[in-house]
Length: 103
Image (cartoon, rainbow, N blue to C red; front, side, top):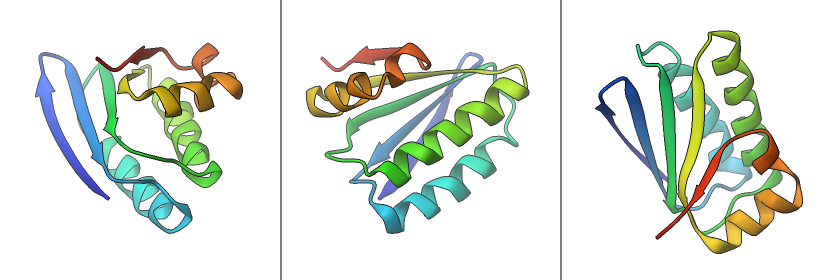
């Protein structure tokens, strides 16, 4: 799993490349903790290149979302593939975090 990030105005865009399994979810958690130190208003997480995510990975997204909200920041998931979108909808994650489907 790899991460790419860049700023677009006041938005931080994070692109995740690769599957998120139980082992890499700890790496994701650590990365998200580092991201919280950056100055931005909203983070867009690009999941276009994420073929799968485990429940542990989803838990790290929820923890990150909770930490962002407590700091007055916003989060949006963008470019999500159809399989992950269906998963996120099935667990109602789309009701908590705004999600924009991929192109």
